[in-house]
Amino acid sequence: MSVFTVFARLVEDLADLLQPLFGATAAAAAIVLFTALVRLLVHPLSRAAARGQKARTALQPKIAELRRKHAKDPQRLQQAVLELHAEEKVSPLSGCLPGLLQLPAFFLLYHLFSSTSIGGGANSLLDHQLFAAPLGGRFADALGGGLLDGAGLVYLALFALVAAVAAFNYRRTRRTMATAAALAPADGGQQVPGLGAMNKVMPFMSFFTLFTVAVVPLAAALYVITSTTWSAVERAVLYS
Image 1 (cartoon, rainbow, N blue to C red):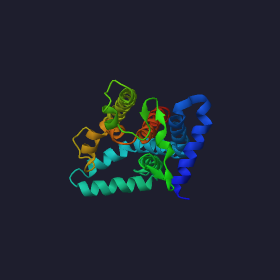
Image 2 (image 1 turned 120 degrees about the horizontal axis):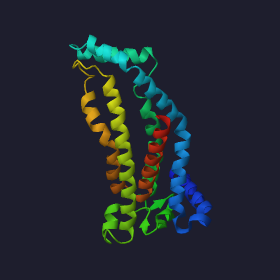
Image 3 (image 1 turned 90 degrees about the horizontal axis):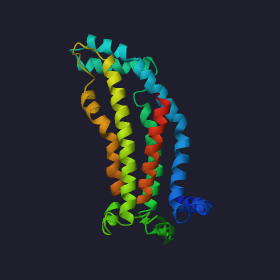
Image 4 (image 1 turned 30 degrees about the horizontal axis):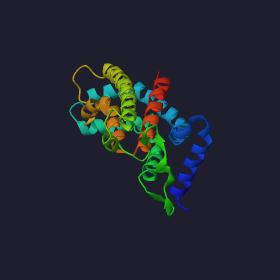
């Protein structure tokens, strides 16, 4: 029995469990519940990442001093910053781990709802819907019936939710970056190479979720939307 067959059975069992509460949308609710369970499993790592972020923020005065000291030697500056993180036992990449560990679950859902057959038989999960939108369908399919009809309205509601979460994340990211900038040197010292470009793009990263939701199967989009919303609430609590 393949991992996809086992995963399909898990989704079906969750849908059967939720059927009395959610009726025809039970499979969609099962995906949301599955996503919440995944996020609960990685929550300890998210808490560790939050502690790491606060530790990195506390290092900003020392990093500012390194920038002044090595303003004319970007390579030495980068090395000194890495050494400082190692000395303080702070990982610059700790915040990436929760997201990376969720990728297998996302790809499982993507494959499951992109395949017409699972384990040698028909993929019955493709028969499930979120209201009028098939869980195996995509936004381009919904456009065939008109944006203001059936599946199109489901996607409009999902896009509105994603945009609201993205705007919330955008404002939080801008405030966080403004705080970090206040701790940076005011004498024009050089930043770590590449950091300036990354800082310009970072506030807009949440809006890329809109593109993801538009191109993946609806089931995978539900995973992304649920996980993104969870992240927004989680970060608001952990980083407050």
